[in-house]
Amino acid sequence: MLHTIQIKDHDIAFSCGQENVVLDGALAAGYEIPYSCRSGICGSCRGQVVSGEVMGGTGGGLTEEERLEGHVLLCQARPCSDLTVAVREIRPIDRSAIKTVAAKVFRMTRAAPDVTILNLRFPAGTKVKFKAGQYLSMQLEDGTFRHFSMANPPHQNDGVELHIRHVPGGRFSQRVADGLAVGDTLSVSIPYGDFHLREANDKPVVLLASGTGFAPIKSIVEDAVKRKLSRSMVLYWGARRAEDLYRMDLPLKWETQLPWFRFVPVLSEAGPADGWEGRTGFVHQAVMDDIASLAGHEVYACGAPAMINAARQGFTGSRQLDHDAFYCDAFVPSASAGPDTAPIARP
Ligand SMILES: Cc1cc2nc3c(=O)[nH]c(=O)nc-3n(C[C@H](O)[C@H](O)[C@H](O)COP(=O)(O)OP(=O)(O)OC[C@H]3O[C@@H](n4cnc5c(N)ncnc54)[C@H](O)[C@@H]3O)c2cc1C
Image (cartoon, rainbow, N blue to C red; front, side, top):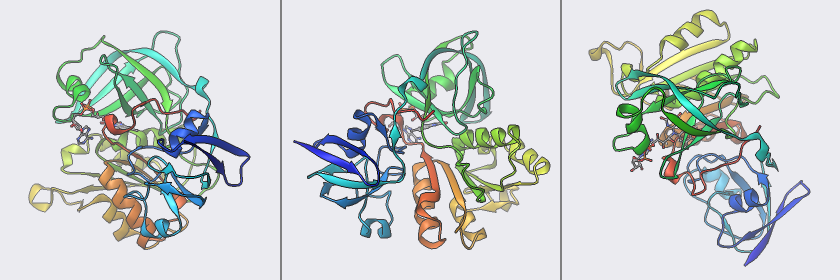
């Protein structure tokens, strides 16, 4: 049965079957609502049900307060009636913005025991447009897709740099670790995602990364440098051990060169006994220990879903961060990032 979904304060309505989630109804109708993990984890796609009934969508990616206010996760909620829903943003999809190219492996660097930096080059003359923070979708030979965030800034547009963690038993990442060779070709579509610096304001920024979640953060900072932005940014980068902070030389260098940039590395499985004199514990907790109130800040968080979830709950729950000021990309296994795995680009 089809239901009508009316978007509050917009002249936008679309149909959605009750077996489908509202996010898919919007995408099928040609509208994009911000979303990331499609697994009910990251909270990016939340919306408030103003009228009508939904089934599902009240899981982990929401705080208790949001649940009480009628927010749901639109990647999980199915309509049981006609609905009016308030969303943070909605806009027509620009499918022409996505380019699919055959990219050649140009360089592979083992940056940590379980991280490879993969540089891909596009065919001669091919350039792609993306925003710092966005990701690409790579089609594997079996037809499935994997997503990876661009680590290079957008002005380097004749190829991409990807930071790939080797997942034990992972079909693609293990191939990167021990099978892929310089000269191999990979099919990639660019750009996807909604994780990029909002520039309508000058609020101080907290950048939060775990592991290879550093990749899009690198792109954002290098883009800010290129465009001579001077917005205050502090990066908290968490990992288990020092060698997992695989390009720590970069944020250390940025800190000495950029008056607006600060860096706080945080390790969860190392301490003074291992020769580590820096911060220890969970990376989101380090932010909460340092900043009593996140009111008036923006947070950009990227990496492990558990870290994203804990950060969102903690920052909005006890550090006064505005719910709409938390932007994230959760590195959920791509297989669970949605069956289409061809999310829609924001140019
Ligand atoms: C928007 C987005 C951006 C991403 N960007 C990056 C990036 O820049 N760098 C990066 O390294 N990864 C990134 N990922 C994750 C990446 O897309 C793949 O899921 C990951 O590389 C595993 O793929 P695979 O083929 O090796 O493993 P698969 O063959 O898909 O999985 C094999 C097994 O490992 C499990 N698994 C898969 N991923 C993980 C994980 N992360 N942790 C624990 N278990 C897992 C699966 O559930 C499965 O059981 C991103 C994901 C999303 C959704």
